[in-house]
Image (cartoon, rainbow over all chains, first blue to last red; front, top):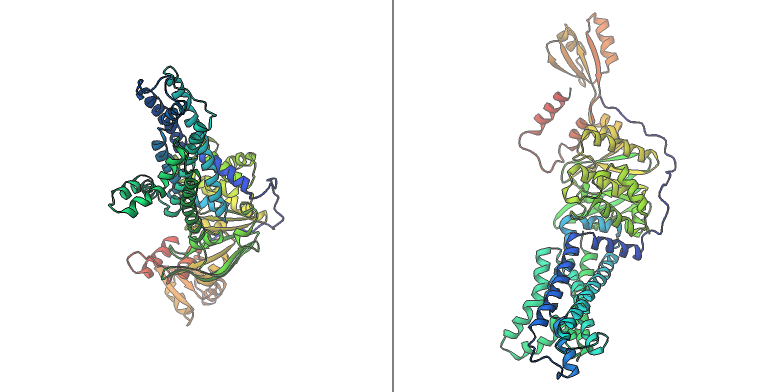
Length: 276
Length: 315
């Protein structure tokens, strides 16, 4: 009743795949880069970010009171005006990249993809580094497009009203660079939180809580210590980097680094220790 | 070659896999059987490092899976068909998996062709049927042309043609000298595909032997006898270790003696026989006998009755 198959004599298997490099960090980064751009959510998020940034810059440019503009405006003020106009979309941009950063990893947990990812890279941590690298690079690139695009748009809109500035002038380039850097760090920070919480809803809530709600809560607490903490918030440091007065540059960079380190270190521990 | 030594996994106070020892050898298909909750999937997950063993160890080709420099070339694994992001196309999923190991895109196309996914490769996986998902999972397992394959329920959701395809594929992979570990709930399919069986029950190995040995050790083979003188023959055959069951007025089922012995006995007594058929048990029956006391989630009703019913419908 039971047909028993007889196993054919075992011989050496013939490999038909050229033996390549094997597992490598460059391969893992390439894999994560492919993964990043082959999801519609990424493309949509970045597209929305570009549209909103440019739209905000346009809106801001036209909203600027013509009486305040004009040839009599000091050169430094002209630069500041343009920087403000071109970083106006930052508030919305950070929300989008925060959501994207969480989804990049929580989406893998919710769909089960993480099992495929971690069987390909069983040491696990390189996946986190690669995801962080491509997310940082991708967000930085798109952020740069938003930032430079917004600047060009605002320049064109305000040129007729005598507001001029050079993109390469450090008073313009530094805050713009700072805003792009802030966006990229927010994305990686969110990736870390998403890796710790493994849930899209939880991760997004936590990141938006830290970015948006924490500052409001601290300012509402009627105590000096609460107000003293405000400059050390993630967003305070980020907006500081993007503001025309690039003061406290080092301090803001260190504050952002500390937030990022906490998130990524927690993510590394969680990824390494817990069962997938 | 997969070797587990005292492999243990505890989830809280529950021990899912309990100090399991086994070796899966190359060149044959090893079937992994056990009731739901017996620890099959957890064991498979530990082999590829998704779950960390609470104690003991498991190695693939002599090393823990994570220590291989090209894991996908060592082990191809299908844990469940849903280990894919639903928003990505099959082609892009495989391309991303391949990129980690520097496996060329040419190989991605090869496995897509091999698994018959050409027509849906550019579609998003979210819209795939269970069967297409299984094929994609198998395609991913084959990407690195691995020496060892671990397939958890590979025929789940496949149509009969797909089931046959998986059977041929696994037999061929084993014939090429690869190690193939396969779990399935389809016992008839397992009987056709596997050479060797490991049965888990409540986290322990309760059998580890070639298919034929499993069947002969867990069940008694019987002989069906059709004769108009059934009552006389039954009295003749009566012995302490022989059981005779009357299935119909003229049909007996005898366990404990061979068909030849029954024939000789009948001839000596001048009893006419109309049928004398040795019956070997199926893997399914052997499995049921082995796991009778190991089932964790049992449906209502006495199991003994269920088993008898099953055996009778099989015959």
